[in-house]
Image 1 (cartoon, rainbow, N blue to C red):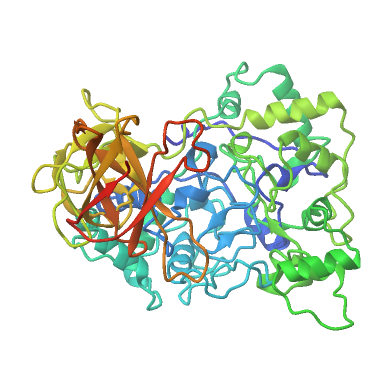
Image 2 (image 1 turned 45 degrees about the horizontal axis):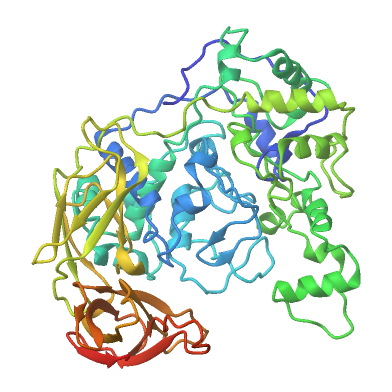
Length: 621
């Protein structure tokens, strides 16, 4: 639940120095004058009571947040880079998104509803605009990140952008930003995400409950995700309880850290602590030297050889006889958006709420711990000549370091943000899934494991949180009640992955699940009496028609009955699924002879064409 609205205001001292942007995933950037002028009027948070329609869209967005199909690649969900249990950020320094490895650390989504822009450089003016840009761009398309073409690339800005932070109609930073209405959103014609979600057939009920119709569109996806992100509000922390009058909520070390933060260290110059429930940000952009410092720390210093290596890594053309300057390789941050000198290498001031939960830190993730962050700011933040004047360093003893880290740890919410407080009324009473092979034939006797995933729900007992173990009936069906979470993940034997993704939201009433197999195949093997027939046979199919080498697809053939003894051997019958998403032939590996002296004859392989219903025989005597 969001923090209780405390009435006791926090009067912040006017610190000169700041430890600031470091403690978050990134360094702050450059709209200092404008942002600070606005922030003087910030009075605190508003109480948002979503309407019934908004609640439905929030719950749909919650389910889409965990759904990989809500991305161009179908492989990475929002939660992949903004993990709820990691402070809504990424435990890795750089994230892997639909376009490859990013050059910046994933920013937290905490309190995103109170920001007038998104991304370290303020690229997007709303969550909706960001989602539309992400979903409207196919993986592998060209783009830019930080103003410098990179490989892999990030997508360009969405062609439709709601009013920006300079629009006088838009609320000031620190006040809740409005959700963008569906009719005000538009997107490009690239529609692979709605097609994928619709093709999976598992979200029609959710979209109908949220929008009154089951049609899946990019604007609706964007609006639902934005509605959910607007609920990701920081929760009550020890700091909040301390400000409300509980003098024991922060220990002695943390209280000393607070005094440092607002005093000698001057961190609150940008990580503002004024107001009854401060966001610990000025919502502005600042250059804190991180772009240059992170570049040097990475081992790619300003020597000529490093410049050329980095130029190659970023896919930039090499110019004969021309060595680009050191500055050409630095992330320009806000400067790439505004073109202003004051914005060069400036990044958004991150909130420090839940900061201890979401290392590593800075926009490039090159500082692993809060202690490293404190030391960086205390030392004066590198040698960038355009560094913000307020970043001057401060005297910091080992005890000071511990005190500041203790205080920053006290900013962590005591409950996870955006936990669901009720079960969505659109939740299915009973779900029916029919499993079909690639030829649309029912898959009888398929073992299906359903594992709870996504957000935990306040469901009533006796709903079990254990995985469900089911077997399809003669018509290919399994039936079950939704579990304790927003989703169930389909886990199939033999490494099979369903077409259309593995997640089933709790709103799904019924759906067909296609498994990429051509059908069942039978292998009848005859072994010599001196060998013990195995329970399983391992098979491989090599992916074909691929420009790049792909690992072989492995499945297993399972023994169907006890071996039948002949006068000179064992006859064993195996059955398995023949994959339809790989090559036209299958290679099956049979065990070797038990004779230890039979060197070089330990494994035998046979190759067969893929044909549903086929039975192949092999004599291994």
